[in-house]
Image 1 (cartoon, rainbow, N blue to C red):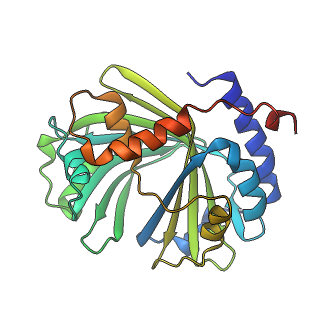
Image 2: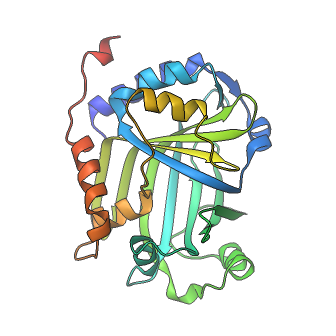
Length: 268
């Protein structure tokens, strides 16, 4: 259950998003980048209003019928022994993630397969679905057979991940970025919230540190930081997992999460 303070922060952030020039899905499709290089960053939600103010000069924001902070719901799949989590933890390349994703505000749903190859590139394939399910439906199984060598019979609904996302497109359409907040995990009889954590992800055809987003975050002392929403969620909801490689990341996230809300910002 999201706290009153976080809901107030979301309202403040929605106000800041009005500084951006909006675009629709058609314009955003000019920078799909389904085969791309991803660079991630994490920081505290207190910094987000200041960061958005600076980014508004360099990026458009996705606007769907006046909504700029969109709600996402995802259902992920893994084996009972969490094989896909283990591959990520062991830093194995040529690994998959499988999920349904629903764009709650528009009602659009997809099944997606993300493949991280041994060159560090992320390749995403997806198919439209009627809704999101806790099982693999006909459309999902069809994509799995077409896009992978995965045996779908070994996979089950491993975790629900919900969050709010704003999506940016650089004004020359060379890159796009997503900024996620209000992470909510539900799995294994647990529900875990990360209200203080923001995860930004820069998506480019090839890595370029001259990105306006990279420069802006560096000015705030924020450097690239590899983190997986899926792995963080699995770690948060499941017990007795191997996580030695993730210990420093988990400590960093916990340090961010331990902060309290800045009440002064809510009065601006």
